[in-house]
Image 1 (cartoon, rainbow, N blue to C red):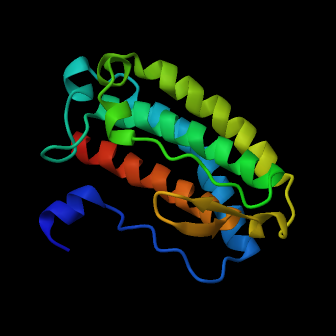
Image 2: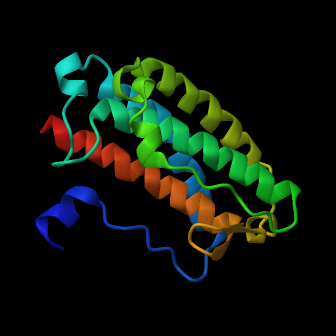
Image 3: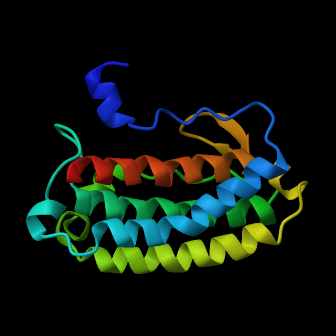
Length: 174
């Protein structure tokens, strides 16, 4: 990978296996459960200047990354529920770049988004732990990528997503 690619994807891109095991799903649920506290711990006490640092040239600030995680994982939770309650739903994409440019994402209190992450992940983990292996095989359609994917894929993607952005924040503190 080149330097910019390393900055964009410090833990690499999400590359799910073609066969997702129950053990892998359990690990991803644990990752999702841990994320809010990890984000809270790493950002606790950061100064306004530290929250304004970008993880790469042209990238988001730490503040924007935290708000993006809340925005994205609210969408994830909604997508999970749609996938469980509808037959192959078409999920709604959103313009994450434009969301990150809104005033509250650029300058808002990150504690609000950390509270959202704690609440959404708390509910998400309870829901995911109640599911059967067959439930994780339910699928949804993503119109932006024209891909049909399983709930298992989605869980892995968001577990990776949290670690991906946690690594972005960590990179600004070194």
